[in-house]
Image 1 (cartoon, rainbow, N blue to C red):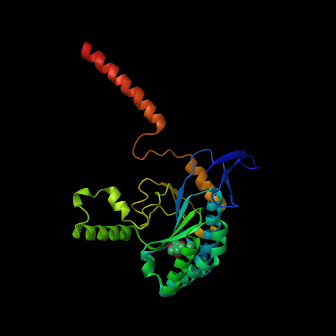
Image 2 (cartoon, rainbow, N blue to C red):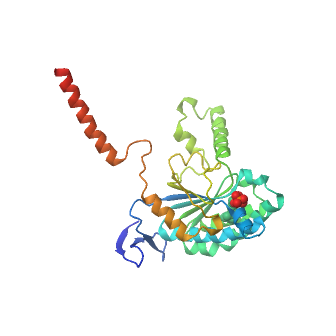
Image 3 (cartoon, rainbow, N blue to C red):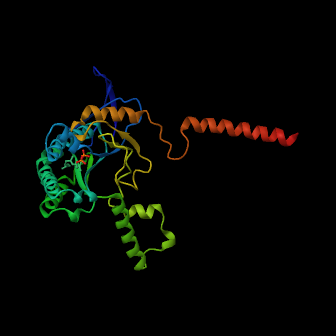
Length: 289
Ligand code: FPP
């Protein structure tokens, strides 16, 4: 994406970036630091939100759809490359039957209703998880939306559905075992990259930022392999209250993070270099005495 001239706004400078999506102008506030290419979100607190309003839990899920729409649109307009939303976990099948049925109907309706917005914003939608577990009609609408949006050149929206991080790794291991059994894969050659190739979506880079709403400090079996080096951000708000301004707060926080991937930051590397020279000098002095 080519950067063009910055344009000041009343609140903070807005950077205009050329979008690959025809007619879409990417306008991104200047957060003063790095911007994540891939954001993953654990949308938590729908039930609590509803209970706080003296409503039944399912109304929290219904209201949560507004946040899904706003956050997806905001991310697309700011030029986020991938957004992964934890919409339904493998563990969620254990919820009361009426809640599961409600969530599946909501999903089905969302997949139909959002098509014009996804097309307008150039969003490509993909399901991620044990999708064969989904009710037939929901799966059919998911496939239709995937096909409709497949050629879109903007943001990738991944909906994690019947998803579990442990199941994903178990599914990958099963496929690897089959390859080994058939003699197509040498166990000695299996490394981290091999395992990655057998995950549900090996080509999308790992999330840079993982947001969780409703204040819980857990990763809840979400993208266990992929979040090894993601930056974590926990918002107090329940998902139905989490809107564009809360996303911008998360992005401003991310811009201040220093990512080291187990190595050293640039400043620390320079300091380590100077330290190394001092140690060498001291060593030479010591050995010449
Ligand atoms: C967690 O809240 C949320 C879920 C289990 C489902 C998330 C679903 C939505 C936001 C709506 C559907 C989304 C799409 C994309 C169709 P919770 O019920 O665990 O809340 P609690 O912890 O307060 O009980």
